[in-house]
Length: 570
Ligand code: M6R
Image (cartoon, rainbow, N blue to C red; front, side, top):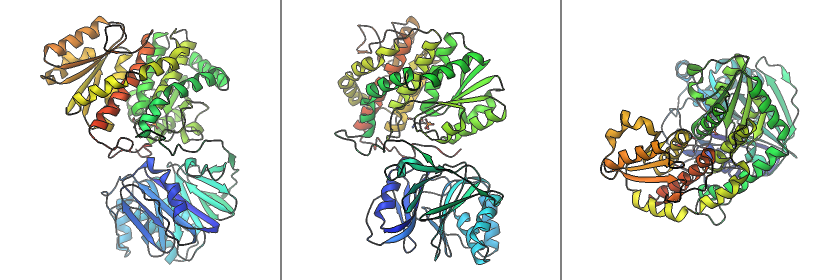
């Protein structure tokens, strides 16, 4: 995934400015980081340390890494240097192995195991051969296979160079300063004017000018867009973790979304309803948590007689046929998930209409869609998605309502507030269960996506192996794993007899059964009056449970190992 920053400025700056901007991109990866200011190369393991080196410069690049090729080591951290050339890269160079061999034959010596380092050597070769930078960049687009947003500096040159294919890259235009970044978060405090790179474009930047070119080397006229985006939440306030703060924000952001769907976003919402009504098939596509919200959406619509499905983005082509009569709805918090982008591209090629439900405005997925709704959850900093899931599900609920599914949408914010009161019980439960290695979550109907969502949350932040599954599937294999004391969480709406039976079946095998229900006799009771409400409220219970399990285990809740907030590689 990785995050990149480049600054070229008339006024000098020290390391503090680019590194504080890089810190805002840490959600994209936090294995290691590095900084190059034209004089000194810094590479470090772990999370970014914002420091002031006191060295004034006018040009710098830096990088935060989520390792793909080559282990998490200092030498694999970016920037990478070759001769006079220094680069940072986000993406994956698919033909790096062959390029590396060719470059080695020509005398290049590699200092890292990364795919990215070939970019530095390719540019260096061009510089040594005295080809102009524009020719070199054009050649780079032709030579590289795969995905990249790359920034390039050349010793003794006061310009900053950039090229992009598929990985996100935006240019922030400030007074006498240009800032390149993986997303607008990184410069939204400094300017509201940005240019988004499209695929196979490269640019040459000075402090007060930019020139864009296409793969054929022809200049491209680009007009800056004015954007409105609140700056990233940088403070946890009185909370120990962003995740906990973000769970508490759910009632407020849910209310904001409902108001917006009835007001500001009403026309767009009605257009989406119209598209679904007209289409022969509605297909949601997403990854991770957003996929679970999509499953809810597909099930809501299905119950109203709409032909709707949810397909995991990374397997999209293998499990669905789409055509001109299909509406594909991409659901993504970041709007940058590469698996989802690929599914959207494929659907576009097949002639489907593309709509999206995103949180981050101006994101790639939003820009690829003919129609896009925003979930208005505000910046979500914790890697584990919480308030975004609630708001994605709220949009699904609103869609279901538009098709006649009565579900108490308006009361949801209040009920979320009530649900949060269960926290002391969940804290106690987490104290009891956090030593376990395995845990199961069972659900049926709308409870099934929720069981998977709760299990995902538990896995990613508490590192407990958790499996979310259909209650009915238990007897077909998984029940063999239930032993004395195995924790099994059942999601039981309105005393559903089938879910009660599944719970009894695991209890009979000695499981430590925990029920999240909706009736008076349920210890963990959510105030749901419809199955749909139950699904959303039970997810919030699951988020709090996962949070406390991870807290008991003393883990880095906001930045779990091996993960990144935004997955911009395939
Ligand atoms: O930004 P997106 O919604 O497209 O991200 C999709 C998944 O990567 C994301 O939901 C992931 O599963 C979360 N870390 C789960 O909490």
